[in-house]
Length: 256
Image (cartoon, rainbow, N blue to C red; front, side):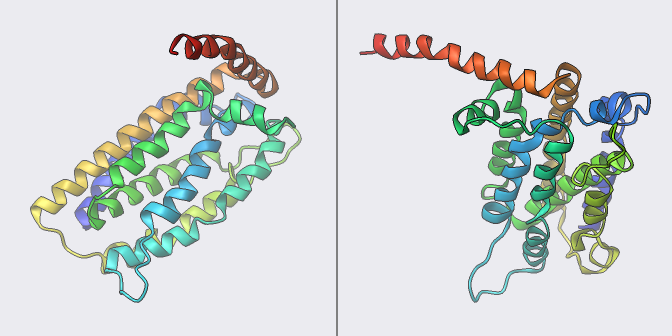
């Protein structure tokens, strides 16, 4: 399994050269609000990831004792339980926490502009479905590597008022860096051996996971560059959704 961990680190180093980092997060000439303008668009993924931890990655089998890797995964899912609350706090700091009816909030979160984060959750769930524990462990380790890379680059980004975000900042980075699943003791001493077939399957899971996050990160960059004003973005997608209603009703009527 340690060879798979090393393979993940190779992918992580390549991922760190993504334009999302080089053209946005690492550009200190941009104000903090712009460097973090992608923040609202990750809401569906962060909330969905909370559910992935609870309902896909976690396997509580009652009295049955989980194997070594599943026990590590279970512990990790509980460590992730509260992080999303920091994100909700940060939305206000980023000027992205507009008051609106639930119906309009639904239109925003299920709009095309936010589809990259909704789709990522579904794709990860599909990959994890029926995958052996060592492959799911490789996926979660890959996600952790992505997360640590993103929040490493978020550290120290301050907004115009001098504040730093919690989720998109040092506080979250420290939490990610301290996860038990990333501890040297776990990675060097506790991981079971894999045979060649298992190792190659785990590596394929790593490849697929990083490909998903490469695509997602490109969408985050695009969202940040195109969304100068969150309130205006919300109003646009809300109106686009409402404009679809007559067309949808006409299509439904034509079907009968």
